[in-house]
Image (tube, rainbow, N blue to C red; front, top):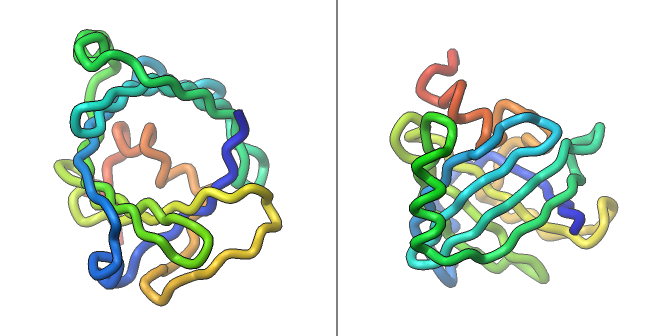
Length: 157
């Protein structure tokens, strides 16, 4: 129940030539407290409830618990979530031994594209494809829960 991941901005659309799957994601939060975010997510026709704890000092590791829930129950939970929701298109891209999840954000976060890779260990080596840009691991500005209150459209260059 520990998630270790690295997060990067994306500097080109090369990942679109290699993806194995893509799907729409809609998610909202029952709680955005940094100590315990609680998210409801719908991926196409599947739904999940996810609880995440506070990130480690370096931003690489955090507690994560996730369970699939019935779609109709997820839709009901969306009605009691905090204001706002995150809409994005996710691409799954195999690179070496890992799968990158590349998210193209929509609505208030249009133009933001982030890639994440999950690791088994904080020191694990992984292939970094040329379409990866600046690493933003641990930068709370890029957390989905923060994109609700401070969306990308409001950021100054």
